Length: 267
Image (cartoon, rainbow, N blue to C red; front, top):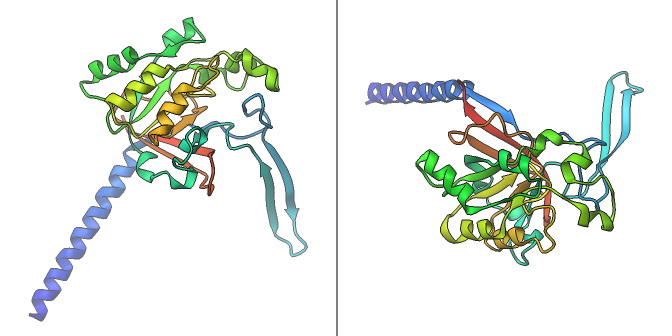
C-alpha cells in the first residue's frame, strides 16, 4: 500500500509539473499588445474635466543612504484610457468595483471602421458594421469584448485632431467632433447579442456631437461597461485574441484609469 501511494504521488507530481510547463510554454507563445495611453500632462480629458497632475513627493538619496521616489497624482475618473462603469449613466447599476471580472477579461472582437471614420469624423457606427464583422468571421460577437477601431488613436494627444477642438470648458463640448456608436447599434447589441463589454479609441462611446449620450445609457442600463480612449488597435486581428482590461478598483466609482492589453498568439 505504501509503495502504491508513493507511486500515485509521484505520478500526480509529474502531471502537475507537466501542466505547469505547458502553461508556461503557452504563455511564452503569446504576444502582449498594450492598448493603453500613458498618463502625463498631455493626456486627453473631457473639456470640462481637470487634467492629470503628478506631484513629486520624493526623488533622491535619503539620510540613510538609499534612493527613494514617491509621487502623488490627481486625476478625474474619466480621462486618458479609462473605464466607464455602468453607474456612470444608469442609476443603481454596477459601480467600478462591482463589475464582474468576467466582463473585463475574455475573447475580443476588433471591428475596424477606420475607413469610414477617416471620411467622416462624426461617423456613427451602425449595425451593418457589426454584421459585416460577423459575416467575415463566421461567428457572432456574443460573449466577447467588442473593440471598435476608428483610427483616431493615431491623432492622440493632439486635441484639435482627436477631439475636434482644443478649447476647454462648457462651451467646448458643442465643438466636439469624433466617431462613436449609434444609438441603434447600441440597442441592437443589448437586444440581439450578449457582449461582455465595449471599447473604442475615441473619447466617448457616443459620437462627439451627441448631447444625450444614448449609447452610454442603453449599454449601461444592461450593466455593460465601456472602455474609452483605448490606444492604437491596428496591431490586433479581427478575432483570435484575448482582452484583459483592469481598472483602478475605486469603491463606488463611476469609472477609473484603465490598463488594457490584448493577448495574441505569437506568429
